[in-house]
Amino acid sequence: MTDRLYYRDSFARTFSAHVTDIREASRADGVSVWQIALNQTAFYPTSGGQPHDMGTLRATSRNGAVLEIPVEGVEEDETGQLWHFTRKPLLAGTAVEGEIDWTRRLDHIQQHSGQHLLSAVFARELNAPTVSFHLGESMSTIDLMSSSIAHHSLQRVERIANEIIAEDRPVSVRVVERDEAEAMLASGRLRKLPERLGSIRLIEIADYDLNACGGTHVRSTGQIGGLLLRSMERVSRGVRVEFVCGLRAVQAARRDFELLRRAASALSTGPDEVPTAVERIQAEAKISAKERQRLREEVATSHAIRLVVEEMIENNLRLVCRMFDDRDREYVRILASRVTASVPRTIALLASTESSPSRIVLARSQDIDVHCGDIMRDALASYGLRGGGSPDLAQGDLPADEVVNFLATMTRHLRHLLAAARVAD
Image (tube, rainbow, N blue to C red; front, side, top):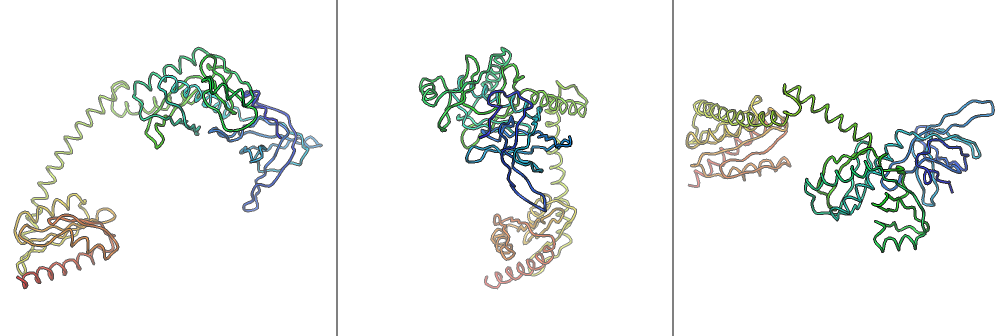
């Protein structure tokens, strides 16, 4: 099996090795992806919520030419063998020099060690154990077994974690046998223990946390470089907390400040005054919305009177049927309501085609005994669509190219329906 150098030194950036095996992982469009096994490696595989390392393998030919092979992924198979994914093959026995993408490795070290510390603080301070961890490209999360966490408790956890980081406590690695680890777990010294058999690798934050883990970690808490809690949300298993550490925290803070600066510039105010300015704009927007609604209703009332005057009563029924491509669906709904409220024996069948799908509205005056909701539901059902509403007003959506035919069919149906009702009476 491959000797895993990162177990002993997470800060190893380069190493020497030789190829022990190679196999083709996949082939697409004539391009192969190869899996290369080495006798030893500093490349960390995807495991335990931490993504794999990336970097380069270099091999030198007999004539001195150097072949650089990017390592795009690292995985462990079911037998425990590590495989390095590349686009170029190497013969078994080839000597290579490996180099880790240090920027990526350092980022993962900071996030993973920060997670250990953060989980320990949540467990100690709030009795909220971590049930899962995910290290993403820009953010990391832990899921906690907790019903809820107050905002002030989050602030306290963040403060304690950063105090321990500032103390620069040593972070050590040791390996113990399974029975010793189980004894530590039973005594409460060990926070959790994986189900695997054999030797157990332990990560210890001095005088604070002891946890089984196979990942890469800092040598002291100061190297975590700071921890920032970003958000919290409810999930099926409890509470999910999003956080960033180290250089990610710096980048996140810089990005947040840039967004705040741009918002302040747009509002012609200072960064500290942005919340007040936003609250003022929201209040003004509410007032403006109420005024727009009042004006919209006034316009709709005037418009309704004009439509009523334009449409003559035929067989004791005034049927106002119109299609609007410059009016939104809310205005058409108000208009239909105003039309049927202004005069008796009136039905309004209106359509708004301003947006897709089009909105159809059907309304009737109080002295007409039909159920608009039932009529609309049945009519749209023939198109495989849904609609409905109350006896007085109903609405539904329809593709734009069906509107003209639908209005014509509905007009005939309504006249026939009301004519039959008069005969029955």
